[in-house]
Each structure stands twice: as structure tokens, then as C-alpha cells.
Image (cartoon, rainbow, N blue to C red; front, side, top):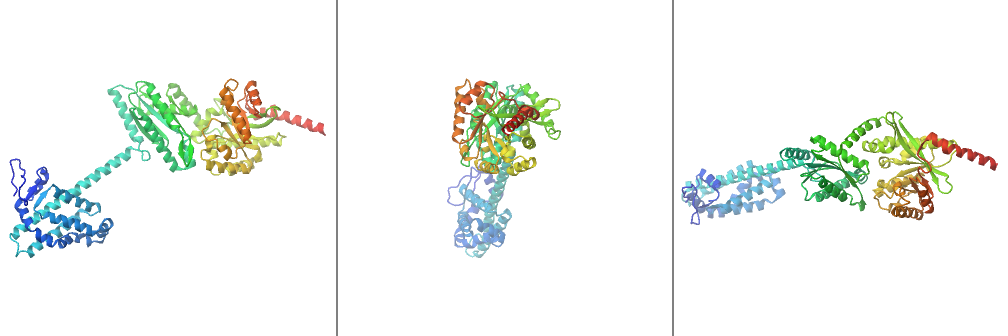
Length: 631
């Protein structure tokens, strides 16, 4: 029997039957009391146990009739488990139900069965029908046994109470599980709304929340903090050449490296999209702390990435703005950090830069130039300058490089460094590159028709042009339009364009078969493997001016230049040095068998008319006089 003490709880019973052992679960006891289940009910239930055991198959089958008669529910059950297993589990539980004892193990086992039913997709309404079938079967058995069972009416009430209690447990379990799943789904939605799916880092929305909170904290405790805007240099090249799958893997590796670098710093990391990452560094009283973290990030990012069995090199450009020193709002803070980041890119990338008011002025200039640049081609404001290339010893002209200039209507003549980076960022580089290539070929053909000399023109090819799908057809069309023979066009590319060896090899092979020469510009300043020198049809190496400027005094530069010349010779490649400004530089190169040179020592880049007057007209006169004397 159940006896209530002054607290309203039922004490445990010593008897083996008629026990309700749930002292520590007042909510369950409350349910039992609501249906008025007593120890007397449990004693009656225990007396029915032998009958239940003898007819357990009939009882269990009645419970599952509701699903086996519905095809869709039957398919759901058989998809996840077997009906026989469900029957056996329920049979064991029903036998235990009629032991006359309700304890924690009884509750837990019933909950587990309910969870199995919910997992395989059985709806709550089915449970109510199944319990009704089960109750009807048990009441029918009691009726059939009325001649042998005593207290039949009391037994009917006890069984009804027990089944009602069971049903409450199951439906509450369903409700709790549904509530849990809703909470989990809500948590997932909230997480996805604030985190980047690819890297798991906070996304743009969460970053702005964190930034807003940082500004609020500053009002309460004025401690400066720093905002980093970080862009991965040359990511687009990886994404375009290897595809988005490898691009995604690369970004995941980048995010892991950022996390590792930021360990130990009070920092929030976010990915705003693409290859742009941001960081908020708290408690930045000393800017050197921000500089320290930025340097770690730059060094970590430049370690090569292993993709498709090749090492790929990238770098990071990081702009930093300090709150409140550099700004007074979220928008201004991000703008200033972004401005500083682009200053790093402009100065060669692979580093960090703090914002300054001077950079703000430069940003305004850049915006103005971008607007004007979009109209420069249509307004015919672009002009080509040409710098002759000579052979050492004879000093005869062996080629000429075309260099684009912008005749800005108010700012005068602008060199490529002032507008080519803007063109690359905005996509205008394709239009400018196409115009440059077409005009250089047209002008060289005109010089050839006028009497020569028959020398090639070299033109820098942008990465966008190099990686277009129809490059050879694009080059062929320009040569056909201008009439220049392929052997008189030399395309200058950089090492970074050959990060994907398979793609680059095919492009260069097609150009070589067509007759166009390939020159590797800025050699020695990139990150690519030297193996491409033997794999690709490269005709000429161009020694970068950075190795030439101090060559008369710097032993390292001397060793590098001598090595490049020797290597090119052994690979049967031509080699040309650019940036020759002094006789000392010329003498060193001549002594080391560099046979082609270019630089201000011989001629600065000149407009076409001046090149014509200074070099081509004298050549034609001399050539005509020589031919006349031979006759």
C-alpha cells in the first residue's frame, strides 16, 4: 500500500509487490496520485501476471495491430528494425509491468521503448490507438478469466490506471524529445546564421556584432582594440586554376593557421567571405602587440600549401586600424583597416600596415583614378612607350619592350604603377591588356613595313589574359588583325602564372607551337619551383632590376645574377637583364656573358615617334647606305 507522510510523499514498501519506489521523483508520484493508483492496484495487477505471461503473444500483437494494418507505418517500422524485435522488447516490458512494482528502472525502460518508436517515425496518435488496443485486449482477458479471478472489477480498474500511467509517460517522452529536437534545430540555425559554413569561423554578421560589442565595452572601460583586415594574395589564381574544391580546402587550411597564430591572444577571428578574414584584438594598449600578431600571421600564411601533389605559395596582406585612434565608428574602422591593407598590396604584398591619415588621402585618389580609368580606353588616353633592348658588344638593337602609359587629362602622364594595380583589382586589366597587345603588334608591323629592323616586340601579359580559355585564339586574332608574324611577338609572363603546372604547360605549349616566344619576367622574385624551367617551353629569362641595382657592391646579388646567367646558358635559354643604369653594372654583366640588356643607361622608355627618330630612322639610313655600297 502507498502511505503518505506529512510531506505528501509515499514511503517505500518492504513487500515484494505493491511497491511504488519513486521517492526522488515527485513529478511522477504526482501523476500516479492524479490517477489514484494505489498499492492495492499494484497487488491486483501482480496477481494477473501469470495470465499475462501465458497470453503474452496475444497481448503484444494487439499493441502492434495499429501499425501493421497501415502500409506506410508498416514500411517505416520494417525499414529501421524488425517487428519481431519490437514485439520481444515490448513483451518483456509487459511482463515486468505486471510485477506489481513501479520504480525508476520501470520508468527508464518505458522511456527507451518510446524513444525507439519515435526514432523510427511512429506518430503520437498511433500510440493512443495502440494503447487502446492493448487495454481492450487485457480487459477481454480479464473477462474471459472472470470465473477464476477474484475482484474482477477492481482488476479492470487497476489495469486501466496502469495503462493510463504508461500512456502519460510515453506521450511526455515524445513531447520532451520534440522539444529537445526543436531546441537543437534552433541552435543549429542560430549557429549557421553566425558562422561561416566552410571554415566554422564567425561570419560577417557575427563579426559586426562582436565589433559593436567591443565599441560598447570601450565606453565602459576605455581600452583600445585593433581591427585587422587580411586578404590572401594570389588566392584567385589557386581558385581559378585548381577549381573551387581545392580552393575550399586551401581556405580551410588558411583558417586553421590563423587560429593557431591567434592562440593566447584575446582575439575574435572571422571570415567575411572569399579570401578575406578579419580579427578583433582586444586590450591593445600597445600597437606592438598588433604588429607582433600580424607578423606571425604573415609568416604562417607564406608557408607552402600542398595541393594536387604540388606546393603552392601565397602571401597575406594585412591592414590594421586602432580604435579609437583611427576612427570613431564601425564603418570607419573597417574602411581604414581596408585602406591600410590595400597599401600593403600596392607595396608588394606579404606584410602588414597600420592606417594613417595619409592613406585616407591616397584612397580618395585611388577612387578617383578608378572612375577615370574606366573611360581611359574609350577616350584614347592610353599610350605605349617603348624601351629598346640591345646586344652587348655590338650594341645593336635586338628587341623592344612595350610599356603602357596613361595620359590623364588633369594629372598628366601616369606610369603603370599608378593605375595597373587598380586595373587588376577592378577587372579593367583585360581591356587595357588587350588594347596594349593590339597596339604593340600594330606598331611593330608598321615599323617592319617601313624598313625594319625585323626585331620582336615584348608585351607583358596579365594573369587574367593568360588564364582565359581561348588565349591562343585570342593571340592569333590580334596577330591576324595587325599582320604581325608570330615570331616577332614575345609575351612576358611571371612565375605566379604557372602555379598550376598542368594548365600552364598546355597554354605555353600551344603558344610555342604557334610561334610566339615566351619570356619569364621578374625572374628570381617569385615563389614557384625551378622545375618549370625544364618542363615549359620558356625561351628567355629576364633578370629583375632588384638584383641589378646594387650589383656592383652586393656580393649576394652578384652571385644570384651569375647563377641565373649560367643556368640559362645550360638550359639553352636566352637571358636579358633589365634596369641597367651605370657602366659598372654593364661591365659586370658583360664579363659574366649576359648578351642582352635593357635600361636607362641606353635608353629610357620613349613614345613611338621618338623611338622612330632615335633608332629606326638611323638604322634604315645606315642599312640603305650599306646596301648601296655593296652594289
